[in-house]
Length: 357
Picture 1 (cartoon, helix red, strand yellow):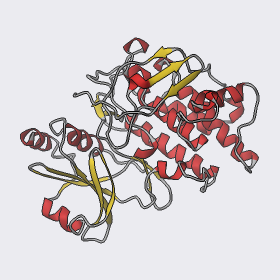
Picture 2: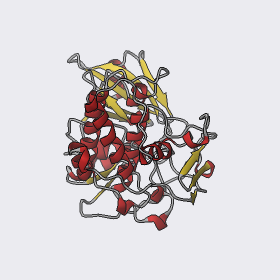
Picture 3: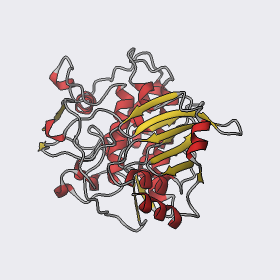
Picture 4: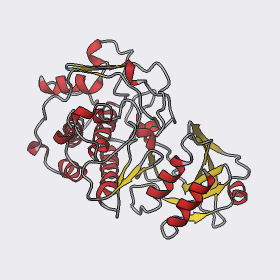
């Protein structure tokens, strides 16, 4: 594994960021004193560079893929320079010790903001809409703004970080893959992602080839959760129709009913409606029916009167398989997910099984 990583780093010498020693990493974190969080990937600690600049240091756990997660992250994010993508400042590789050094994001991840116990929009819809635009711009850059096409494969609220001004940054490229910009359909040896956000074609090959449209689907699911301020799947909902939030909200709109948003202005209602309509286009079952991220941006920035509601994107589709997961939060095995006509019930019961690449 060590030889493979070193060979990769040498081949990417003009692209990769600063290489730190493990001693320097330990000094930055004051011997890993301030832990920010942890998951299947390892732990994240707050640190400080000699310049006084605050950083977040991801100390990777033992890799199950011969260092492939580390290579994926450095290879993809090391070539990225965009306001809405997390900046990789440096890294460390010393034997089995691997670490990634990022800018510190003082407002944490988006899931902490939208999944609150009070279920309140503390920022207001204007700021939430700005976050949506920023995330869309970041994903669009990954797909079309680099010399390589970068597919993230794990877009979800947990992987959207917020700086001191709540500007969003797409982060965590452990499952990302690089492809030629000319590739409209890409190859993938195993499904990857997090249940609730993973595109159906990653599981069912007969739905269409795998492409950047997989990230578009995940973005749509993220949008729905931002609107609902709840997980799209709620197995404990009072009514069966509310188990799968996108289906429930589609039915309300289709019947001409208002969405319960509380005390909001007309302008805010327009923003939310644009988010919802855009999300429904993004989560269409067939990849060919979904927009590109450039089209998504146009939809979000256009007049809401010009946007058409798409067909209801839910069809009967039994799921009986498992996929590779980012392993940073509990997930659902795909065999516990039922996609039914007009309703999808997903029950979070077991840890997702991981398929080796």
